[in-house]
Length: 113
Length: 111
Image (cartoon, rainbow over all chains, first blue to last red; front, side):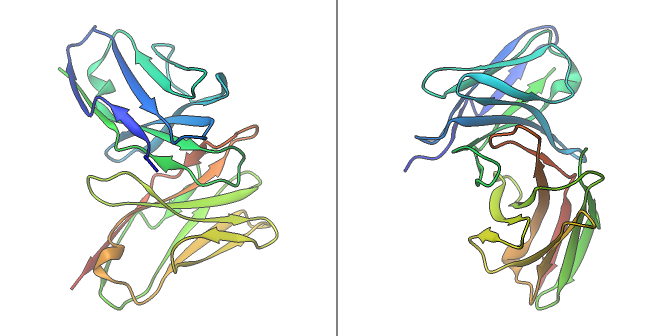
């Protein structure tokens, strides 16, 4: 079956702009989580969506937002981009529950110049 | 709430053993382990649950001490393919699938 698909794979944006990243989970998975990965910081949790509802949110400013659609696809948006937002953004999907395996997409590499 | 991993990095020769530790300041319901190779997405290794149940795809052993709120991943007779960064993760309350990850342990296996 198809894996988690993230688009686009690479993005270059200018400070102050906004960006929208997309994640299509594995068919049948209702949980989608977003992570920011930077060198030395590991995987920083952004937010989790389940059945179109945000279940948890990480410690990120309000410039970071997201949503989930009825088909479980998810988007995250970053407004007023800053240089420090440059990172690999990973999306992970899971069926549901805390005992389930999460599957990661290949990520979107965002560079802010 | 972020789990703490140790060591931060380890270098091994093929065939040597390594242990990666993960500890938390709060009670753990489960511990999840992932490996990320350079330029690739993290890949699931195993889940350790309270009561001793384990779910995993790889021939990797691990332990979970609920009282000490710790987990350890044991890599024995390491192979070159074991190289990568290992992350432990724990679920948030109310989570339906997301995890809070440690900062990772970078493992390098040399020939």
